Image (tube, rainbow, N blue to C red; front, side, top):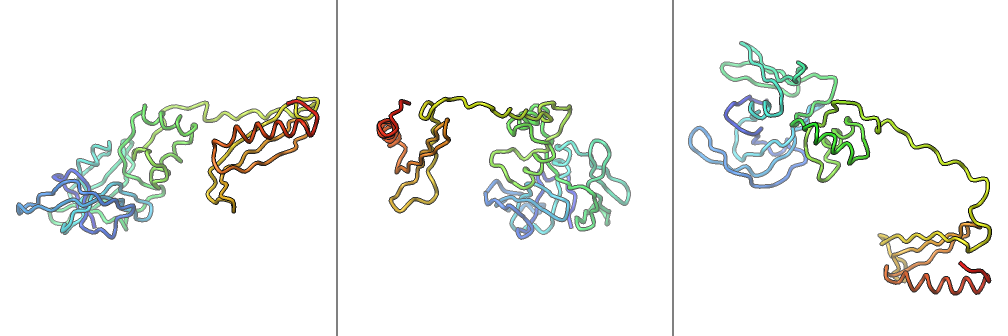
Length: 253
């Protein structure tokens, strides 16, 4: 059960076990009505069914779960109170959370919240922030960007609600397929070589080699693979390869 509080600046709970993605971090002290103080020892997410409440503070010794009315308002949500009920709505009037009044307390039971869509109570990103991350993520659909935020899948992605305010044409574009070649670009072996060095590999070879140099002949598609212990061996490996191969094949690269 969660209570709505106009005095607290953060969503808070005294139940550490209900927090997912918990981060242990001392933030500051909370002062209770009896002038007692208790520290905020960390924060996490409250996830129940389709409802996700982000960055709920864990306050040691807090006897009730508290929703901050001010934090809802900062997220551009509307908190509406009536004689026997309360609700948290979006700007377009969609109800996200609904509670009831008992004596002088308004309470919200997350287990009774019914919604067809996932609800993630996050601050709304500005238009500049939304389109900045849309471009950084290769014009990814905004719905998937918000899913990555909810799942903490990308480090450094701000925990905001990203919204689309106009259509992005680049997000709908598809790359044209390369036309197949009817004739090769080269006329003889060793005329053109393609090289690629990659590593370090997670698992080293028996001889402790963890870099791989791949050399492909454009004309024949013949491939040589050279294993190396470090990157700085590459120039010497290439020079030795060119000298040896040109002598064997009597061709010049």
